[in-house]
Length: 120
Length: 409
Image 1 (tube, chains in turn blue, red):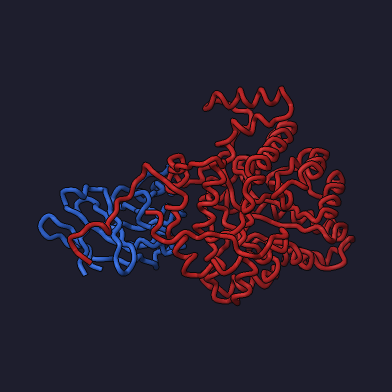
Image 2 (tube, chains in turn red, orange):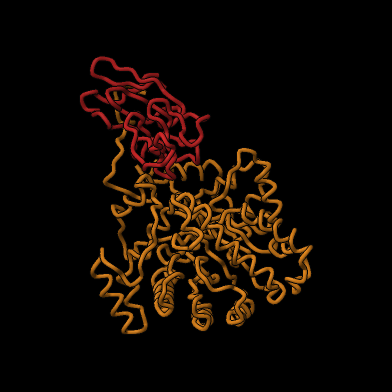
């Protein structure tokens, strides 16, 4: 079933919507011109996984000589963070960063003209 | 479902908050698991007493210290009388309730902390919650003993007058100013009979040993009154050993076990369970694996070094197995048989008591117990509420009011 999410013009980049479906809530993200949709139920303890902050991956900077040189954000890998406990997920894949064997259920998003739909 | 009707779509806002609304999914779990049918007691939850310092400081008995506290509170951002703890529990803002909570709206004559506490309790399906402070968890390392005593007395009196006297579902184990043994004894005498006081709590990060003779009359008094003593874990990043850690995950994982492991070891090897056989002892917020480990370590050494602890008539683990342990933060190994062994080791059926630690960053829901595959329904109910009801002498009839799902929107 296609569920209408929003008019694309009203769905700004870096914004999101939470959609109620018969399969439960779905979080739809608009990130860098593309749309991604995942189950809004965290794999950890069932929290609202899609309703927290967007945070880039944090990386340790390790020099050629293997010494630690501080930390930085890797802006090429954006995460969304479950606000209950901080579980992080890759916004492009739904992969759990703390346990990379696990993925949030992913839903397809389609654009028809100016309308954005999620298929659930 | 009409594909063109967006009334089933909502935005996510970061300028509003409610304890109920942020826990809609917890209420869904509570309904699905029929928590309404049985008692759930949370033995370790928190409020932020620092938000009420203006009220609490007025309860400080000594006029000089009271003046210092009120003056200190009026100029935030500089040095303060109580100091603070180094750390970043909210993971750089990722735990959004920590900074959104200022937007929560309350109304009515009751104290804001009563309103917000009942909201999250009902959403989770909790009947009774044992409420503890937050910044004061670190007060045991304050260099001025008289400040710890003054704040402990002021906070306890304020908590009794403002919260416990007015809301029967909120209970507490009151803070003991353990750096002053006489004041500790006096606290039990003065507050042990107040409404909602179910025992007394020692914050674990501190540097006075629990087997000091100065504490014996307090343990005796608690034993006579039938009130438990608990040790609430926390960390101290200024501790010389813990200073070796450079990330919060390190100081938290170790620190919340470390001080309770020291206190437990001293408690057992000095024979306090033999001296106070009816005193109920409880260990809070260290998880479970530390007890599983320490029981084996002490038993192994005890068999070779009985002369180090001649007061003991049984192995250390046998005494530990008669104490109470709170669940949170409950370790969840991939292989549940490991957790099952831990439960068996600590005699979870009668000694384990569920705790949320809400609203702190690593809180647990009742589901951490209810969803375990190796527990019977009766065992789940014992751990979630029955054991605590026995410990705190609570009526086992459920009094919770889980809000209907969808009522928050």
